[in-house]
Image (cartoon, rainbow, N blue to C red):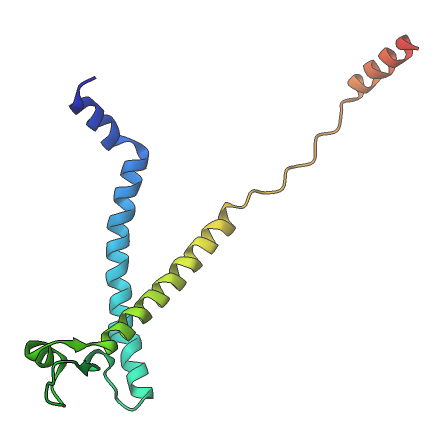
Length: 137
């Protein structure tokens, strides 16, 4: 079998295609969650905490002057950008919760119905069994 044939078999296998679709959907879903956190949740959290913008919170590690924006502080030297970490951690928590809810819903939908009660044995079969048991005696 040639290398191209092996590659073709691998590429069109169901698992490889499912993985490709999952990665593409996951990337798009990640962008949606980033937007939800950045555009909807963080502004509300910021408003609750007095207009704070977490993304610009940092500790200067190279002696930068105070009050610079995060981008300007990074240009001047190393910074410990913990505000950005808070935003990314919140993204992860929300994404994990949404995925948990989706998997939980899918598992609920997948649950098999309880097996149906076996059909009643036809009367002629019962009669034949009775005859067989009598013949054995």
